[in-house]
Image 1 (cartoon, rainbow, N blue to C red):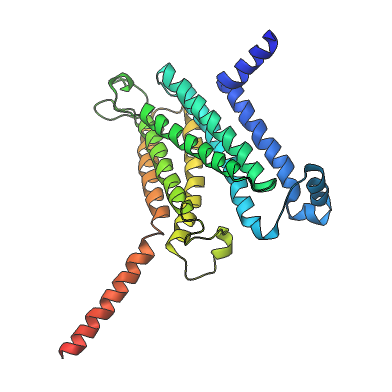
Image 2: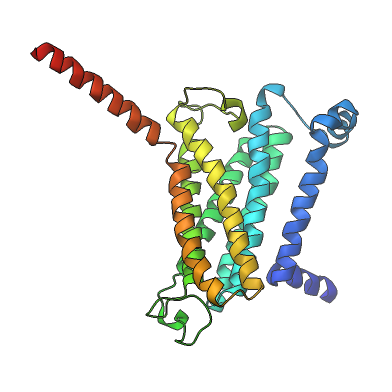
Length: 299
């Protein structure tokens, strides 16, 4: 019993243990549901998996299953990155514990009940718990952003620090992490708002199915912007984590951090702008047509 308690303590309280659990979860999901992919269908492996696991696959629901599947993987990857951030960046111990506990419970709830709902019948209590898990991950992101607030006095850098900072000593690397966290929350909100319209003006689709469609709804554009920027922000977080792990500093650090901050802001605004840019152009076109019509009438 003591050995089991020690192992569980390692797996769910230490950074390495939490990361190991996350990697194991992604590996299991990939190994199992990868057998349902295209080549596996031709080799007959998909049929074996369906029979052994008792999966309930309706072809008309394929897009919905895929969406829930990659959200379970994405939440796990985000959780792993959060573990690294809470371990690497200075913050209060209770903040680290609360953030890690919240996001761990959140992503595991998302994974377990999301997959149960998608692949083992539609018990809608599971879908509700899937949404609860996503909400907890989002809440953990809010807690992380609050803990990363770079303008606290205790996180200011000394004048002789080799890391990028402002004249007042604000750590620009911490600002970059903070901006990335806030941008991720904003981008997640785009997906959540669109998801709230499912069955009420919005239908399930995969982004690759709409590439050649000239006309897209606002909700479809929101999803396209959401999925692109979320992948980008995961990569931004990974870049910052690796830089911190490698003790990146000096003149290149002073150049890189402002670029990371402004780059994150610009690419987030650019990816999400697909929602309103086309709409603004359309309204401008209609206004020009109305103006031209009024001029003709006045003549």
